[in-house]
Image 1 (cartoon, rainbow, N blue to C red):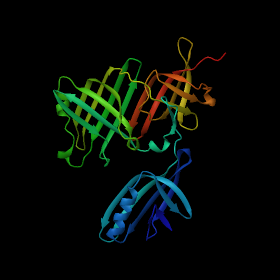
Image 2 (tube, rainbow, N blue to C red):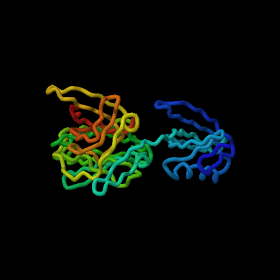
Image 3 (cartoon, rainbow, N blue to C red):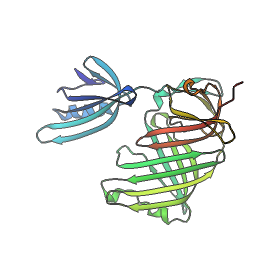
Image 4 (cartoon, rainbow, N blue to C red):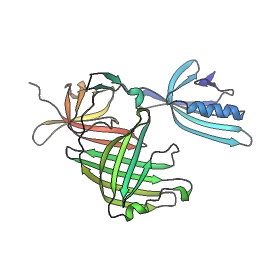
Length: 308
């Protein structure tokens, strides 16, 4: 028996398995169903919730849907191709400062989202992540103590040329204000991570897309810190290194999953024995948020306290 959640395949599909990095598995599933009702039930099941139960050969695996394709064939009927990725939750905890309540938000960092809002000549416009992946993007946010920097690339690949985003009005404006929002679908409202004026705008049209590149900066906006995040090597810290500055101080750089709430001068708890980071409280010097189809990450720089 092979099933996803409560949906049981009436015809055994072809299943190909492979291991990817971090010992995670992928399942490529291809086959067909006999009726329109079964076809509809499968599509509804796949979209019912972010993490699904996949049962195969008496083994249960929690999975995410990496990709899905459906088509109606004159001979083969209702065809499907699915890519399921084994889900391994990232244990990320944060402590609410106001009452010290500790929350594990690992189940709430599944589906990264972005929204870019612009103001020009008294008008408002936006681009956002869409359900259909007919676009490409690369968003980089650099946050320093007094500056918020952004660098954005976006390509609209909508098959209908007339439906693609028209960026010409953006480039014709004498001044373009940009605000970038990042976050996760499971966490509700996105967080405003950068806001400022664009000092470089490039726009073009290809046979397959309309594209735009924006780069600019603004002054850092202050707000009270609400949570202290706990970061631990081998658990939720993906990469890291330690270097020495020109002044002789030790500076740590660690990369973790996207945490759009973080800003410079905020405190985090960090522990990574392999890099000699044993301090339970560190103040962020600077950070960088990155989001693209390759993933969503936050890189944090902070000074390491000298031990006596």
